[in-house]
Structures are given as structure tokens and as C-alpha cells.
Length: 334
Image (tube, rainbow, N blue to C red):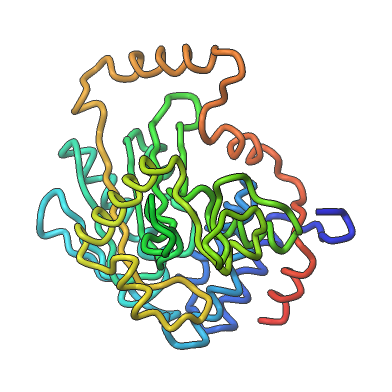
């Protein structure tokens, strides 16, 4: 993106812009602040496809009435190690804000805990929830499904969502190790940004509407994404479907595709988060043992741990470049 195509905003301005847009379009303060924070954090860390880029989709779902902007999640912790959150048809960030501290507390005491979230609309990155838990000394895994956008290995028709999975490992005196990845070759948001900015896609990203491989993002948007790593990525995508839908009782991707109103925002679905206390599971030496392993990995020439780029970006508290066309679209929503 050239300088002429972007505008520089402070991180405070990014948060305020997002918060005000959500308030003007039907969110109460709790939901607006949870959404604005997660978009602020994405822009801060350089996760542009999950930052302000998502606002038009969020607002479309509020305007269509699919999502309730003042939804108040309800929490059931009647089973000791299982926290069940009903989002009551709101966006997921506020449900996470309410549920993650409870999940952390239970995992710290019992060694492992599971949180399932249903009846919400997930449109953000997954790393914020796993990083939250890792910063409290817990190992964390999170996953969610979406609408069909990805053809299973060997197929040419969309059946899986991009089905991201995130993993985080705690580290003392260092940022946690965190990764967040779509099980497709690229997330759809990255493909949409490539189309907007006129970039070609890496080999193996997707198929055009004619069923043939294409590096043109506009053709892939009309066609289908492919899983990373062929049948291996396809199997992980299948696992995410079963964990985030089969184990929560919420929509599989194909069910989300059949019931969504296609307003441009996220479909209703579930999320599963697992938190594990390594102190109780692995014992006293867990920290040094894993730290020695990660040090050896980092010392290999050319190797960078997952999440290091995001954490490096985070150290810069300065202005962020935001696409001008996107900003104009967002400002018109106020």
C-alpha cells in the first residue's frame, strides 16, 4: 500500500473510532468496548485482516438484525470443569470478556477446564483469548468454525469454514508463544485484502469458479479456498468442525451456510476453548524443561517462534497506517 492510499491514526484514535461506530449502530457500552478493544489490539499487532477491516461486516450484521448489539451473555458453571456461555445472539468478544477469567480460575484449581460458547458471532482473531490464558500461566487451545469457504482435500466444492485454531504456551519473563492460523492456505480476510490492494496470492491458495487453481484473489473469492498442506490441513479443519460444533452443539460450517442471512458479517456458531495448568499436569520442572526446548529452537539459524512478529509490532506505540478507502467506509457508518 502506498502512502497516498493510507492515513495514519494513533491507537487511541483507532479504539475511539471503532467504539463510536459500534455505539452509533446499536451496541451498548459493554459490547462496544469489547469489540473496539479487540480491533485496537489487532491493529496494534499488525493483524490487519482482523482489525478495522472487519467493521463493515460487524455493522452489516447489526443493521440486518441478525446480531443483538446489547446482548448479555449468560454463564453456566454447574459442571466443575466445564463453563458454558450462551452469547444470546451477540458478538463473541463480550462473551469472552466475561467468561475467560472464570475459565482461568477453574483451570488453575483443577488442572484443566473447557469453555464452550454458543449462540454468538465470531469475527475476530483467535489469539486474544489464548494469549489471555497464557499470560496467566495456562496452556490454551481455541477453535471455531465458519461458513463453507474451503474445499476438503480432493474436492472442489466449499464445505469447511476457514476453521482457525489458536494455541498458546506460557513463558516467564517473556511474551507467551502464541499462534493463530486458519486451516485454509490463507484466511478469507487476507484474500479480500489482496484483492483490494491488487496483490497475487501464493500458489495453492484456492480455485477459481471454473474449478482450476488460481492466484487471482478476485477469482478465488468467486471460487473456493483450499486447506493448507493438502489432506493434512483438511484433517485439521475436520477436527476443528467437530470440536467447535460437534462438541458445543452449535452450527457446523454447512449448517451456518444454510441458515445465515449473508449480510456480510459472521455466521452464528460456537467456539471451544481448553485451558490447562502446566504446574498441576507436568509438575514443578515444567517451566525450565519447556524453556530449554524453546531456547534451542530459537537458536536455530533462520528460525522465528510463532507470534514474535506480532509482539515486536506491539512494542511500537506510534501511528498505524490504515487504508483510506476503508476509513472512509467506516466514517460513513458513524
